Image (cartoon, rainbow, N blue to C red):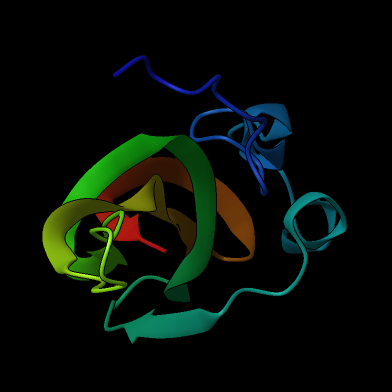
Length: 130
């Protein structure tokens, strides 16, 4: 069975988001202009200043292909005999679903005294069927 053409992602693809415009030393306001407000802010204890980890999350999905996910039994009438009897035949019919690759990405920004110090990104891929 040939693969279906790949469609465009429904959200920003991994590694192609606005975080590429960030630079070390940017102010908190400049970071928010680019990234928006974080989904979560984790406070960190420090003796020398204000430290926070800003966490951003996004999910993107791309249809990958149609795949067979099971079978179902279908009963089909077969041509009857000359007496009008209509026998039936059971057939296993394939059931297909669209396989979708979903990517959950987390971007963490280390902010110290309202300046960007470091950024890290991680991603997890999973498959869904619809």
